[in-house]
Length: 395
Image (cartoon, rainbow, N blue to C red; front, side, top):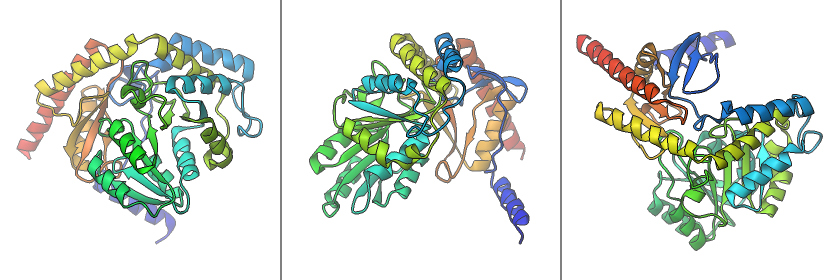
């Protein structure tokens, strides 16, 4: 079979399994409503949790940076791409995180696949939560360390694996702070307690908690009052911060090690100046406008309560991610399409992103959703459910 025939057969297999994905075109700014493929819909799939990507101060900062620095970085940070805007941004991240220093990467994915192999090498052990993000999984694979998976949020299993780890030189426990597909929060105090007991490092991925959890939006570490502890904090600037980039925050020596050893940092072009300025301004807005987080959680409660009253049971309702489990890939894709027909875009999440049989709508709430948006979304869920029930009973 030639290459083109094989590709066609593979695409056909994905289609028949309900797993083929297509790109949709967003034709407007990512607020609570977007123009998708030429049609305005309510979006329940965005990571722009606080709506900061369209905040006037953030847009102004980006525009000013373009005028001063141009559009691109021109090189990797170790060569010509280390724009002075990095200094200000990394200082702000370190301050929010209660860390000595921070290092910004060109994406969250690059931060994980760079930091994990730099921290764990031959003769080391990585202990990773079973539902960690793909970038953590890939970071573990790129590392030469032994990786063991502990059951999701299972402290007893983690403790058992640590108790058997004496032969390894170093141990690194890595976990999401907020799990991106389940919406629940890692038991970080218990994880940190085990790390102290067994002399292990802890790294937490704050991608979906930075800007959302904690008194000032610092994330899971702040949420649990673990600031100023020896915890490596990784995160992104592409979700609640509304831009692009990733970071690692921790001790100064850790940051020095990453500058010299993290290949995804060394060999990536620096971020555009406008992106750096926008992220810095967004962090300022996040810290000075706590009502954004209050509005976000008010919207979470409103939507979660209304969905429950309508008979929809989300896997978790403790964060801005409300996973609605639907089962097979085909069922999930079908319901997402029907929901879109009724004016709501909540993308279908299917294997291999989630385990087989746990296809879901990953419903995400934004501070910029209005009450009218959320009420219309519930009406759409009810209409799609009624249509699905009618089709099922007639088949």
